[in-house]
Length: 232
Ligand code: NDP
Image 1 (cartoon, rainbow, N blue to C red):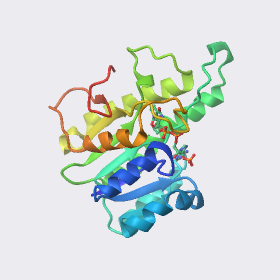
Image 2 (spheres, rainbow, N blue to C red):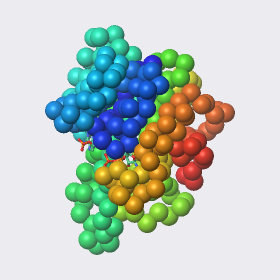
Image 3 (cartoon, rainbow, N blue to C red):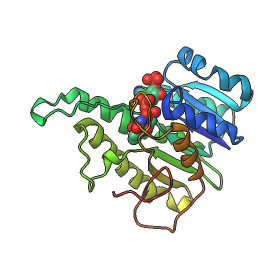
Image 4 (cartoon, protein in one colour):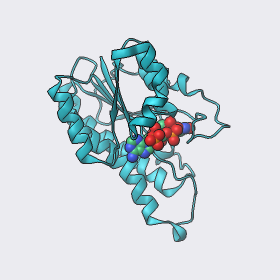
């Protein structure tokens, strides 16, 4: 199966790429900067060869994503799974009075409009019995758990969950499985050194969720990397 992963050059995206390749999947690894991406993924490319395709994918660049879709279509490549992993965190929990609206716009542009652009253009390529869209969300996006994070990050992840809901409603009759996943607190550049969960453990758990279809339901599933339901 072909799995497309955004933000594949570091953090959870890199571990998802490594874990998917080890399971025998072909990975289309999206990175913003091809030179940096080639360096980050060099070891995996050496081991997995043609199974790894590196592509330039900046989730804010709609024309670039459309060009990627056209190029994959031309090569007759389909996708079994799309993992929207790329995101930014504005960790500063400023008061509303001090909120920088441009930070808010940047978080929405990457964390929400990014996955929307990706699915808008790549959905026609998604096919197969386990066809899935996995939006990497966060417990920070839960409305009911009142997470104390920054306005840009929490609101962008809540909105991402609503995008998952819209996709769920639209795509369930086509058998496309859509999930929002909280990956756990991991010691990546975003999570910081004190985080307890190895990103590889999270990546393996997330890949295990592929093909695990729940009973048809009116609302989307928001789960953690072990498949446990999260509070929406
Ligand atoms: P990192 O900050 O370590 O990595 C972020 C990734 O997103 C990088 O690959 C980065 O690419 C990419 N990225 C940022 N902006 C863009 C863009 N415009 N276009 C394409 N790629 C972009 O984050 P993590 O690996 O920790 O996080 C992965 C996911 O998990 C995110 O969705 C995050 O919100 C979520 N998450 C993480 C938690 C944690 O504890 N770490 C907890 C809860 C959720 P580049 O190298 O080019 O900058």
